[in-house]
Image (cartoon, rainbow, N blue to C red; front, side):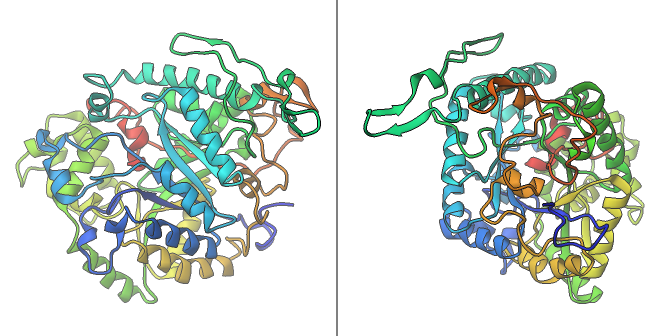
Length: 519
């Protein structure tokens, strides 16, 4: 059974997620001041349980929760602008809210961001396995390596590790996680034999004995196998190392780019690397693009909403976020200075990337940049009727080869209500979105693959080489063959460099471009 069962013949059934963070405004700083916005209620449980129920009713696939471990203090070399404007500050911990949302839903899944740089794998494996149990297998892990120096200073370092070392750590981290999730317990280890008094058969549990450069983990995993064993793996990275990492490990790739043409090259490169280097079927790798719709029943209504929202945007907050994403402090430039003519190649390249797809602006100052990213961050802002926005989404699918979208918001929860009430009916009328979950009550993987019973990673995925199963014996080695094409069934996230050049930010904060839309 395919995820396309409820769509018109030949149409791609889109994967749709809500993109949020445990803070006010997320990528639209200052909008917490709008009288209709409720994002400032992010510390209330009902704020999140109501969202989960709303999105499940609309049949969203998942809720993608971003996270950061430090504040945005590059702009003006101070955290104050972020603190004052509420630009992703304060921000609460995301794993804690997932059980509450899961308790009021049965189908929608939850992708949560956790860094490999600042947490021991044994501890994280325990937390993720616990969540996978409590949600009946509806958890995904968005793997990031972190990019903020402020996070490093909060967690025992003077500054963040080099880009390449962060990815080297992440590579070994995943090896440890696979061993804990996949090979530490046989799937029939828990016996619950009341007569014999045996809870777990010790012959079916083993240490992993991992000894590496960065981690020494004896094991065994302290949690029995959860419904998915390994949570669905979401990933962000657009540098050379990030794309290689995604091609091997990611089951879900998230792209943040101005236009389909910018995203297309990186998407194609990752899929080709996945096939050539890691023996994965490129058709099984799904990519989701960040977009932020502003919808109206008429074009005039949508434009009026946009004009209204702009009045509440914090330009200081936007420059704070931009500074953290890029490592560039635009405060050093004059209010009227054309940024495409400054000395810094990084600043020029970044702003030229914006200007290429926003020709309406004849001059690009720091004020122009702030306005550009103040609603929806670095992803495209789609303002129009449901038909106009749906046309834009179809353009992304046709030109860039994406498989779905992470929808950002301007107002919480109104933006998501508009998507539910206005956009999704339009998508369904075009055969672009399902009527119901393919596997009601199923795991994250089952509903993204569209295959009942596909709870574990695909056989071709590297995680499957570690699987200890009662059916498959000690280990099972999987791989890709032309007969194993489950396209439209596996989700993969990558963050593109928003400007089509993974080296743009080398003068800034290293890998910030690779995670720009996760913050």
